[in-house]
Length: 229
Image 1 (cartoon, rainbow, N blue to C red):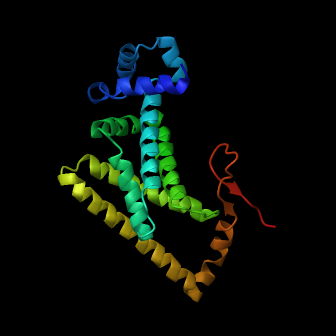
Image 2: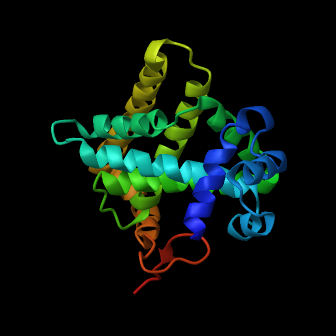
Image 3: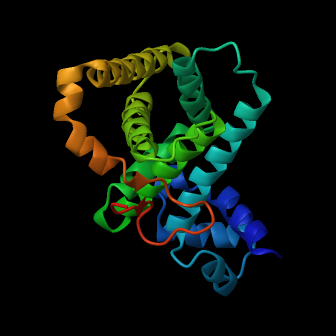
């Protein structure tokens, strides 16, 4: 059986245990038994046990979001509404909020905090790519960092939201995106101001040497530096 199929079977079997035992070794062992997967095979596919299953669950949510974005005509939406729709599509891809709540608990632990941060970064990167982002400079990073903040805070709000159809969450999301748009508007005005743009000439020249990561190969932290020519 291909590794992807083994992981998929384990993930499906784990979902009923996560609300009670979290993304834990107990859940991983129970998933092996329920799915009829030998422990050695399960560990070979998921060396970190339930942590790998939690990440696979997040990846599945991203895939569902991308499918929905591809099937939706976004051409009539304002750009900020496209971003909001993408974040909403990502949250609505979740079938059980408790699985996310337990994931937040897991990835708040120091050993797994980087895994959680990278998962959120990948989600936001996928959103920007799906929406046609073509930036190749420092904006590549600022867009993803900003959306990561919006996405993370919206997830936390959503987890505690009991309003019908999560109406309050979508209102919260709209406010956060509006805040970001105000920042972008301020940045544009600053660039048009001769005094401010003059003061920022040095820092902007420095930032201009930062490039987005190459698609074909990434090692370590994403990105690359171009020194003065």
